[in-house]
Amino acid sequence: MSFLSIDRDLARDSYYAATVQRGPGYPALTGAIECDVAVVGGGLAGLSAALELAQRGLQVVLLEAKEVAWGASGRNGGQAIHGLACDQETIESQLGLDDAKRIWAMSLEAIDLIRERMATHRIDCDWRDGYLGLATTRRKAAELAEWADRMAEVYGHEFTRIGEADVRRWIASPRYVGGIHDPHSGHLHPLKYSLGIARAAAEAGVRMFENSPVTRVEQGAAVRLTTAQGEVRARQALLAGNVYLQGVAEGLETRIMPVGTYIVCSERIDPALCDSLVPSRSAVCDTNFVLDYFRPTSDHRMLYGGRVSYSTMTPHNLADSMRQRMVGTFPQLAGTGIEYAWGGFVDITMNRAPDFGRLGSNLYYLQGFSGHGLALTGLAGRLVAEAMQGDASRFDVFARLKHHGFPGGRWLRTPALVLGMAWYRLRDILG
Image (cartoon, rainbow, N blue to C red; front, side, top):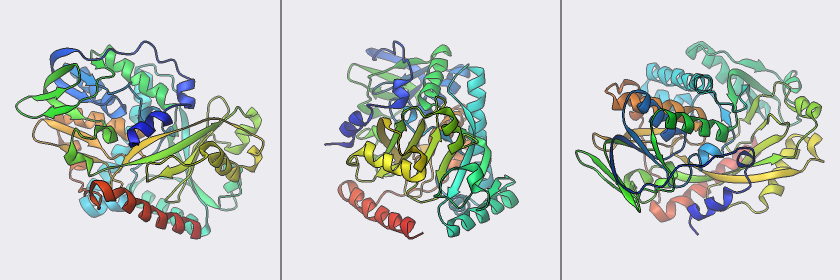
C-alpha cells in the first residue's frame, strides 16, 4: 500500500473537518486554458502564492489534486511558531550570520502575515497568542535557557525564561522542569484559516480547480501542465504540492521524505480544568527530537500530537496510544476520552531546512517545511510572488540553502531513516 492510500484513511476523523463547513468547492479542470502563472497544490504555500500574485494583477490558475487544504495545511497541529524546523546554527553555517538574521526576521514576519491576513480577509480561525517551549530534563532546560540567551544577545529576540520553580505556574504537568514563553507566536484552527485564504484568493480572481491532479509537467518558453481532462499553459509555474508531487518532479522527490504525524483531540473538558492545564492557553511543544506538541482549543478540548512514523505505517491503536501520552503529560485528564484521531504526512529535508528554488528560469518550487510550515508557507508564497515579479532578493536567501537527497535511493531511504530515528528516540529517553 502506498503512503498516498494510507493518507486517504488518515484524513478521516479530523477535529478540524468536523468543525468546519467547506461549502460547494471548486470544479475540476476540463479543456485547455492559458494564464500568467499556474500553481500546483492547494495548500497554504500554493494558496498564499496564488493570492499574492492575483493581488499584483496576474492571471493565476491553481490546480489541486483533491480539495484545497486537504493535506497538511488543513490537518496540522495549528502552531504558528518563530524560526524554522532546523536550528539557527544550521542556517548560520551555510549562509553566515547576517543572512541567518534575515531568515529569522522573515520567520517572525510570517507570523505577522497570519495576523494581517486574518484582519484583511476577515478570517475567523480561533487565533490565540502564545507559545511555550518546555524541557523534560534539567540538562535540556539548561540548553534551552542558553539558546534563549543567545537569541536575545545575537538576534534581539527576547523570550520569557521559565525556571524550575516557576514552571507549574505555566503548565500543570509533572513532566517539565523549565522552558521559555514567546508571546509573538501562537496557534489557530488551520483548516478554517486555509479555507479563508482560499476564499480570499478566489475573490482576488484566482481560478481554482479541485480534483485535478497534475500528471505531467513540460518546461519551455511556457510551462505546460497536464491533468486527466485538461491542460494549462503558463508563462511561469509553481510546484507547491510537497510529498504529493510523486512522479511529477522526480528531481525534487529525492530531497524530501514523507513522515507520518498523528494528532488526537479530547472530548470537551470542564472550562475551569482546561484553563488550569495551560493557564496562558498557549501552544506547547517540548524540546525532544521526537517531540510532543499540544494546545487547548477554543471549545475547551486538548489537542495533542506526538506520534510520528518514518516508515509511513500508521501506529497501532493510534487513539489509545496517543491518549496515554496525553494523560502522561496531564494526569488530570485520566477520565477524559478521545473524540477525534487523525494524521497525515509532512515533507522533511535531510537538514530540516526549507527547500525553495527553481527548475529552469520559469518553474519554481516550495517544499521541505519539515513540520514547521503553518506560518512559513504563507511567507513562502509571498517570497515566490516577489521573485516571479522580478525581485528575488528574499527568495534567493532561502534558495541558497544546500540540500542533499536522502541516502539509500527510492527503496532503501525509508529503512535508513527509520534506523536513524530510533537512535534519536533512544537519546530522548536517556535525557
